[in-house]
Length: 261
Ligand SMILES: [Zn+2]
Picture 1 (cartoon, rainbow, N blue to C red):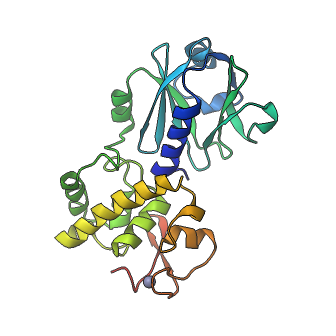
Picture 2 (picture 1 turned 90 degrees about the horizontal axis):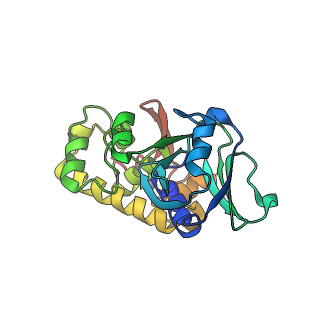
């Protein structure tokens, strides 16, 4: 599922390839992927205009259109964006295809149909209406500590609570907790000052480094959990012991009980 680093990569790709190109066609292949507006409203908001600014917040991508509206993209479990020039390169589950006057295309792909598109004229009001809290990379240490230490439940679901900290999902919460040496079931309000400091630092470092790796596990450091899991290797990259799993907040956490306490 696309989390903050994945969506940041989509945002950077969009900024380098999608802006200031006149839109000539709007092909909404799956009208059910559009919420809150009719397909003709989407066409009217895009056709003849250009995308002019990109903003990511949490796991959500916002692209401003020169008519003044923002196109909002939620990726669900499997979504991604693609730019290409040859229609033969269109991804397999494109739900929206935008054609540019210069001959190129943009596609919003969403195989499992859990993502969606919307239009908004006010990003901040939109985030409030969706209950999406501050972005994980914008939250300062004091605010981060307040969120975590105010959690009576386990720390993993607290990291994944989009109302409190937006952008972290199942994969990166496991990685952050592994790097911080904290067990996923540890209660938020029982972490001491050093653990809170380590957790904040790990959150920053993991998210920033993952973006630098283009959210590609093959490029991530060898002592990270994510590339191990991607390779199907269930041993700890630090101590070599078998990794364990547990259910926390309805999700499966992967962790090392020797390296995380
Ligand atoms: Zn270990």
